[in-house]
Length: 428
Image (cartoon, rainbow, N blue to C red; front, side, top):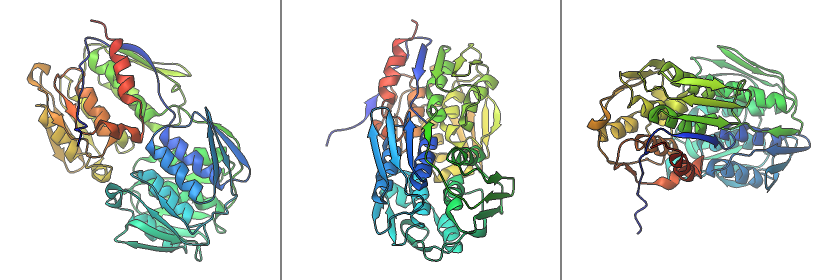
């Protein structure tokens, strides 16, 4: 069997480049769900590429939704809440897709089975299954994991209690079916809400499709009964993906501008540029772009990233090249992402010689001089964000390789080509 491992080239100097980042996976998946549940036709522009988005498209098609992808436009024929059940759908390795489609399937009269790959079957979903049962749906699963069999049953909506510190995807999944429940939906949160910006994105996308009766508070989320209406909708650039080229500027003391992500961005992860500024970079924003400029003075920070959890691997990679320690807190829950993002991050950083310590709700990174680092074969653990973050370490550390480069197809299939193009802009 061919070894998929690749060695990653270093940068010859500061990288100066303009980058176009693909559409947001988070926004695309929410827009696809709202469009599928809407009355009428939706035209989506700047659709996100990658396995996660295609998993969502294929799952919705299996539920009877007409979706046509032509060039730069995705056309969705909404079913006005009339979901066709009786299917078996494969979410592959897409956690967001599996959670959203499970909730959508609860609108179907016939039972739908939602399944996925081995790694996805290990991820916990019991909180979502219990919430759907409480709302009246018929849900059958083993130990709160996939596969799950779900049908409408007596689904009517109303008030439920739910933890907010397990996954914001559970909350978003329920929110999006909320307008189609006869009694609407009220979620009383029994704990603080993690990744709150993602819930805000959900409410904003829902409003774009006509479901504006959504209130997101610290302890309660309310969704009024109503409906969705098809529309023309443009998906903004993916802020999580944008963090990688912007981090290239910080690590190489270069200057990278990302187009399509500017002032007023919907995604909380657009705050990555602010984190880079706090670590010593300069940041310039326009209405349509964000630029990070390295200053040669990169220092550590102490930061609560509970609302920015997908950025933790990127920030950790940058922190390895700072002049002082970094402590990331509030993210104990990311142990249950595609990988154990805390333990696996610590092991990867330690493998190149960086001191990294796992803590109960985060990690501490104590960098050393670049000359003290060395190459290593790093495992990505089926996690696209680890793979792209390891590629950042390789910017200045020779001999770094990853064992499964193709995993970036989950969110940014062209990342390795983009990285090569970035390095061509390195000033010697």
